[in-house]
Image (cartoon, rainbow, N blue to C red; front, side):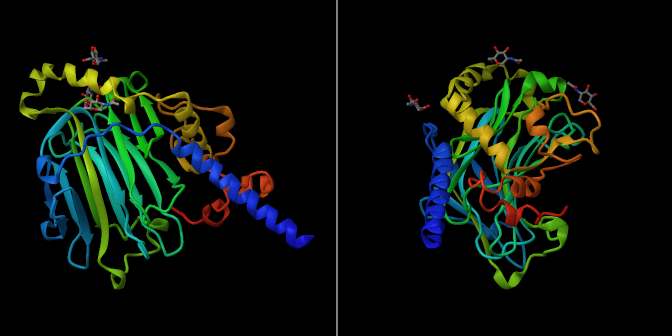
Length: 340
Ligand SMILES: *[C@@H]1O[C@H](CO)[C@@H](O)[C@H](O)[C@H]1NC(C)=O
Ligand SMILES: *[C@@H]1O[C@H](CO)[C@@H](O)[C@H](O)[C@H]1NC(C)=O
Ligand SMILES: *[C@@H]1O[C@H](CO)[C@@H](O)[C@H](O)[C@H]1NC(C)=O
């Protein structure tokens, strides 16, 4: 009886895992045209550690004891869809950050715009965590942190940043995970052309549990692989920025593309992801922001899952609902791991 019981419980757990997986994958694939590295990119630093495949369709960024590495798009884009399939380093990755982001910080030092995916390395056997952040006109502080629902070091997954004049959407595969409307951010909405960057670097002093775990070069080299690189948008010369009226056609294309439309199904997947995998949000961090920033959409039900520090109380939720909440099975093991 007990044997049977534990078995059927296991099967139910597996079935609910499958269901949550299906909720994330059963959406139409993005229509993305990839380009080879030399058509849109150049090395940024650690050139010897930017390793391109012979067909130039994929590129690896290597971190070893001498240097990290990075690449950037050769052009700046006035709005765009920036996307790549990425596989993160496996094994022991504490202290390592892999970043995939757009910025114009080298041109506009005081009023820069930036849209970030930052993957935060981890000690062996623990899940990768990541954060997204948004800067507009020089002001940031809009971090959200999450767990992934898969192991990003096992297979390639597509990570995308869409930036139109209406909204910003971060997505993973075809699941939108964060959306910001431009009218909510008003003058703070990113408005100046940005380049796409990808980097791997040693962030021992903060990346993993607030710097508790450092990069261990015994496990080097650390390799992040990129392919299916996509840059859809209006390439502009920053000097001629004011003349960039020619972008309206590209803007229309962007706004009408399938990755700019969030279907009801995708919206449900986003909500589910945010309810079960987001463990920090600046919108719920009332210690930092006594009044939430204007783009924050405060959901009163969601609000109860966060402490004043903006941290989710996953652990408490788990203990209370451990019987019903089998669809987030490992959260209990990981919820207390990030201590910064
Ligand atoms: C995909 O994009 C290409 C190029 O932008 C376009 O020609 C094609 O019609 C699109 N296909 C679909 C199914 O939207
Ligand atoms: C951007 O920031 C600068 C400097 O802080 C400020 O002067 C300017 O008004 C801001 N622009 C917008 C559109 O809010
Ligand atoms: C966004 O772009 C479209 C197409 O170019 C344009 O018609 C519209 O005025 C723009 N909206 C804003 C708020 O800039």
